[in-house]
Length: 148
Figure 1 (cartoon, one colour):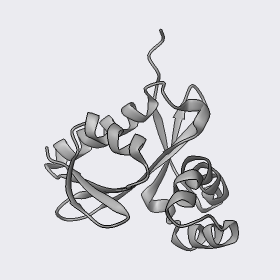
Figure 2 (cartoon, rainbow, N blue to C red; figure 1 turned 135 degrees about the horizontal axis):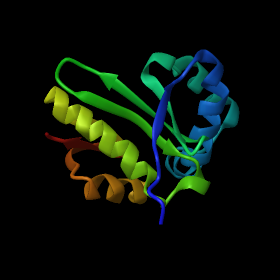
Figure 3 (cartoon, rainbow, N blue to C red; figure 1 turned 30 degrees about the vertical axis):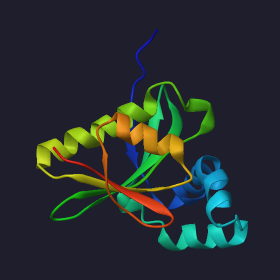
Figure 4 (tube, rainbow, N blue to C red; figure 1 turned 120 degrees about the horizontal axis):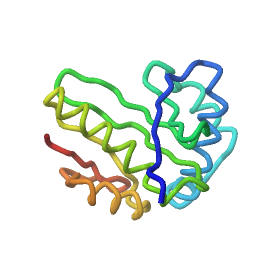
């Protein structure tokens, strides 16, 4: 089996509709379970919070397969989003993407923090497999951290 490749491209403002489509394909089910899905509300919120400086599109073999959003803070890296299009899941691409962030955290000697919806058990298991531990929780989310 061919090893998947990973390239990251910095997002631009023009990528916002594509980023929303990736978000919707990845998270609609979980948002519906947690709060209910309102398309217009989600689109508006996404447009309002989309900062291309923090977003990168993930590409393998010339195809955009997902996106990652990381905020760099003085004390840690905050993984805000790691979304894959459904057709590209279970091929090792998400692991490649996360491992590249883990290497960045190790290089900068910073922990990586994230939050994950309680209803998204697949994501919780994915992050746990990569060494993330739950450090706190709220009624809707688990807060996880990877320490270098």
